[in-house]
Amino acid sequence: MSSGTIDIDEFENADDDEFEEQNDTERIVLFLDENDDRAWKAATIADQLELDTDAVSAILSRLKERGLVRHKRPYWAITDNEDRLRAAYRLHQHHQTADEQYGEEHLEELKTDEMEEVR
Image (tube, rainbow, N blue to C red; front, side, top):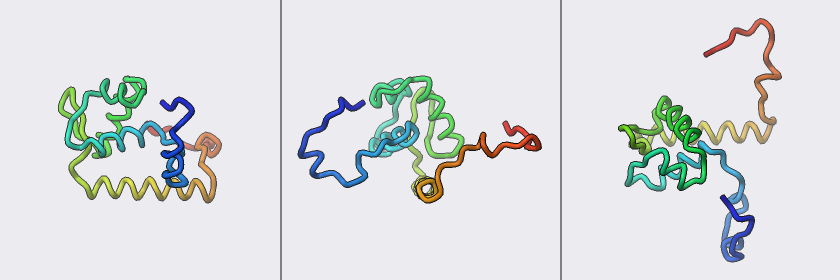
């Protein structure tokens, strides 16, 4: 995590949106993508990103279901399917843009008594 300060040169050379907060899933995918020459244990990823190991494990499992990471117990790596990764990134960008333009959806606010619970 950040100490609350950065070097002024890093500040001056950064893009305008470079310091926006990323969610944990984005951080994990970015970490694995930047380190695609290695496979990692969930605990090591958690240590590297200063996240809770259980949270990282849960996120990795969801990413595996979506085909964005590979898993051979106990190691995890980014997918080798670059098309799938690009498509997921484009979809993510689309959702971020929609959230910025129209505001984030809060599904609990949209829920009605007639809706079935999906598991």
